[in-house]
Image (cartoon, rainbow over all chains, first blue to last red; front, top):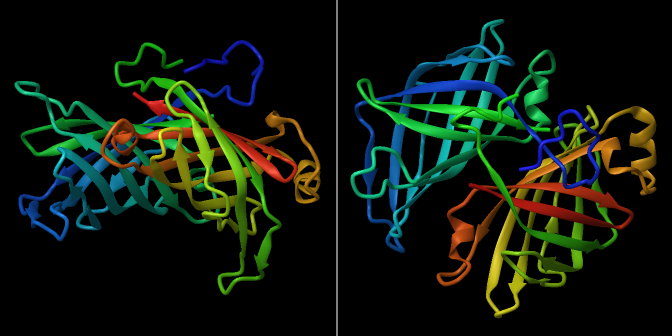
Length: 158
Length: 160
């Protein structure tokens, strides 16, 4: 990753990441995997029961019970994430988020997934948060337990 | 500012896809009030350290929404053919917007502008067959794109 702070971008391929916010999502106890589906994969269901958003560009909450991750659990150990839920910013704005990415199951005796990266897309009304609907964002995830939750850390691609 | 952060993702250049585009078609206004376009991948090349090949001609294209705020919201699907003959399906989402109104007018006329006059970034997903390219279906990528008259060039980085 090229960093362009302190100098002009010299190529269209130059880009940089800016940490914009973290979302900690709490999961419901009724999370489950159903299947197998035709082709051998399974259907995941991980409801978001709530959570918090904090960071330099957005603060707020995850709207309780507003959605879930409907992942495809593949036979090769890769989980294709497809989460949909609502956020509520501190000013009351409601923001729809669709989060897609990959989680590769932990290697033996490792606590964290060996790969856990996402690209969220947002739908948001015009106003102070509408930059979310014109900026490509990438995120990383960290699984946390007790209670069952995930920390997503998001970076805007500048 | 975040170089030291333990979560900060790292990127690695994987390949660059250069595409010549067909003429566009327009649905405007769409029932939502924005404009739907359709533009096809007439031909293209894939070059880079992790993949080489071509874009399968007219295998698909982009069906972007041009929003009233001037943001183009991409939705592209087409096929790649790797040098070993493997066919790889690509779907791409992302955004393009000009950094001021005068640049937006020039881009609408398909004139050449500087890459730092606009924002054009994408996040692709690939359906790659089992074998040497299957890593493409288990990594997140970002693409930094250049708009050229009648063409585009997208530099893809794998998020490690």
